[in-house]
Length: 387
Image 1: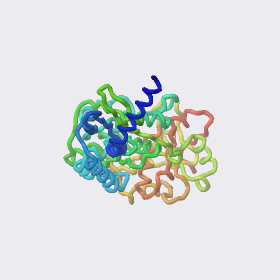
Image 2: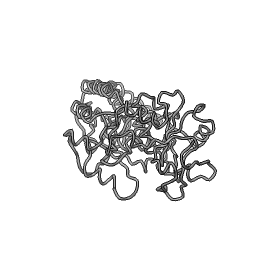
Image 3: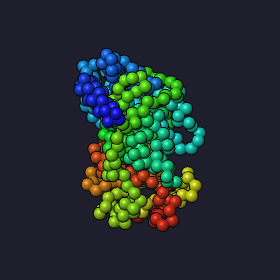
Image 4: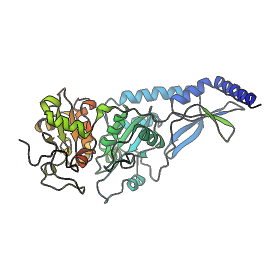
């Protein structure tokens, strides 16, 4: 009897798969949960909204149009940096075409990024906490997590590997490039930073949503599952990352680069202030010595940003000049490793280098940065200005 029941279940599954092949395939491609009524064959898909997902009737024609929309958005966003107007136009064409992510972060406890997110955010945005989406097994701040952890966390935010993601921050926050770099490090190419951040969005007349957001997970799963409502559901695969090791460096790699010298192994560039670089100003974290990696150059991250605006980047020409003034050859075939206090503003330099025409894989971030290097007595340190 058990075997007969199993065979009947398998037969039913094949019948459902055959009857709904096209609609299931469409839903799978677009990461949307698909409910299939066993009695009428009605297709119900979940549509992303500001508060998560809502259901609506759909067809293969509307799903096909979403393919074209997503392709058009990817073509429109040809640069890792996008304007508020570009995002507005993309959202106007199809609210489902892109996902907005607030990655605001502040060093110190005087501001609360998640509370500021609730006070106002882009349509349908979710909040990306760089301190929580991190490796909890190390004492260093917001270190990049494992592939599995990141994939799960991104899926829980309602994000998918097929999404075009726009990252932004609130006024005074400079962490959007860190979020951008993290997605790139996990193999996601369609990720962009909103130049000017939330202030630019408001200035452009973009609509603002308020309140708490509860994302609907796209946690990886596959195949048909039967729901309590007597329906079959095809779940998406959510976000599935793959580590691009070229995007990051470990302390061992940086030590090797420092010992071999920039002519042989490439330049290390520090995004901290010159005073911290020279050990003339204290480090903000306890137990961290002053100084810098021997042989590294200093280019404070604010040099590649607009005056008085940490949300906006300078032009590619101005960025190139800033690196040249710091003694860094943007066109070098050797890696340019970026570092800072904890891997946040280093990503600002990595993004700036890509804007200046250099591939991000040639400008990896030293993830541990000075929080790791400066806290280890066994690693060499220089103070003052290198000769």
